[in-house]
Amino acid sequence: MALPKPIMQETDVSVHSTFASRYVRVCLPRFKMPEQSIPKEAAYQIINDELMLDGNPRLNLASFVTTWMEPECDKLMMAAINKNYVDMDEYPVTTELQNRCVNMIANLFNAPLGESEIAMGVGTVGSSEAIMLAGLAFKRKWQNRRREQGLPIDKPNIVTGANVQVCWEKFARYFEVELKEVKLSDGYYVMDPEKAVEMVDENTICVAAILGSTLNGEFEDVKLLNDLLEAKNKETGWDTPIHVDAASGGFIAPFIYPEIVWDFRLPLVKSINVSGHKYGLVYAGVGWVIWRNKDDLPDELIFHINYLGADQPTFTLNFSKGSNQIIAQYYQLIRLGFEGYKNIMENCRENAAILRQGLEKTERFNIISKDIGVPLVAFSLKDNSLHNEFEISDMLRRFGWIVPAYTMPPDAEHVTVLRVVIREDFSRTLADRLVNDILKVLIELDALPARASAKLSVAAGPDTEASRKKSAMQVQMEVCNVWKKFVTEKKNYKTNGVC
Image 1: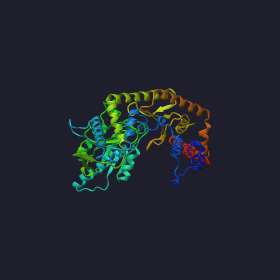
Image 2 (image 1 turned 180 degrees about the vertical axis):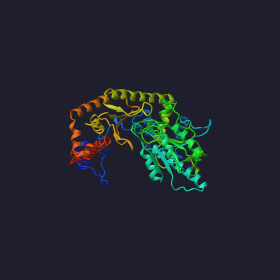
Image 3 (image 1 turned 180 degrees about the horizontal axis):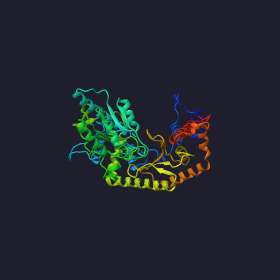
Image 4 (image 1 turned 90 degrees about the horizontal axis):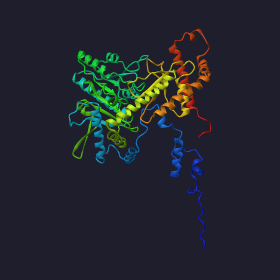
């Protein structure tokens, strides 16, 4: 007797192709959770398809963040992805690995530690959290000292250059600290130590120096700052310290610029932050802050956890977070060692030099970045009367490259810059290819000079005597603002009918 054939239910999609199913024929909800479930294959395919529209991380030359690691480290990270870092009782080995990283980095930065002395520091989500923690320590120490002296504590300030990363502005706003910025000048795009020390007063909780400016990769002169500040402290009786924001340069200078004195070898440097996920060579999500010694971190900011018979101090803004980045950092430190990091940083520096030489051969660009610093190339057009840096950045995306264009902070807003960050996975072949693609963009723009000039003529209005008297800086600012508006409108444009 033949068995009856089963009736295929309308909802049984097991025999359908993913792209033939009803789940890809309608737009998925964007603002509310859907009422019904969908098969895991369909969910994966739909999300994966959307993610294809993202840029390629390897070609994202705007970012300092690591985009490649060895497969063995990827395996370690995936194995630890479900470990909550704050559960120290459950994961004591992970905590031990973090402490080892802190000690290794502190010694790399020449912290004045005894042979078996444990360093004072902590792993963070990134340099932003690290800077928040260091800033809080400076503020609390300043407050305690002022209270002992019977002085007011309502007007703390930090002195920085105008080239600092936005996380310093966040700290100042979130924790009610005035941010006193040393303005930049044409051709000098980092903090001037002399001007910084002039701005220091009795309410200054610290001076923040940048080892590797985000704008052009340049190292600020921390030693000169230390010497000038020591003299002022001696003259005034103040005790103003220094924090070094080594987010980008902290894993570079010790390996290829050991002669530069910027770290705990300087007596006023009390804390240093560094990003493990930049030139520490770990995927995004890990940073470090190291203090000179225990006295530089007020004990009232530390929470003590006792487990396995040992005291574990903890000082973080976050609570739950993954353990895998900490494990990845330890992997890189022991896998590469000093020799490996030095080889990688030297290779990055050489590739930056190759790219720089290729751009100089075009005779179309001024190089803004320095030879000593973070391995990047910042450059601007010698002649931007017909086309500008924002156009080049926008057109390079057609080749897959993500190269940012931006204006400098005050008082150098008239300078527009393109920047290429050289990471471990940026090869010499890619450097040659990038130069060739930039040349293609320039040739196309040269053939279409009216594209930018026509927009500018419309934006500038009629040709009047007042418009002819505008300075070169005003004209450059107008060029930048018009093109930025054009690029922004183009990015925000949405095609009708698209889900």
